[in-house]
View (cartoon, rainbow, N blue to C red):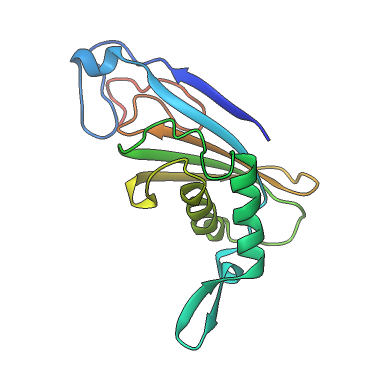
Length: 166
């Protein structure tokens, strides 16, 4: 498991930031990004099971959640960035095989597990989610980048936004 703390440099003063802010001190500050490599998540279709009308996290979901918590220090994860601010999340999904999969089914189990591990306070703080399917990797993995929102750089590649980007 890799955890990387990096800084995305802000674009020049006066450039546009996604999320509505422009110019001034906001653009001069660095936007902190946390990158976490996780094991392949169970699908949202199998993450929950129902007992009567009560949804419960399935065995596969509990195992995934336990692995994430263990990797991130047992519920005391990095919590950077931000502890309570708005979040943009970018995810590179490296599937374990060539089967057809819906990439959006990885989001809820991953967000719930990261919240449970203490990376952020609540998944309701996530304002932007970007997911990208990548090449097949034995065993599969998820590379998750968590950045403060509004953004001054692309959450996937880190390129600074220019004044005309929206």
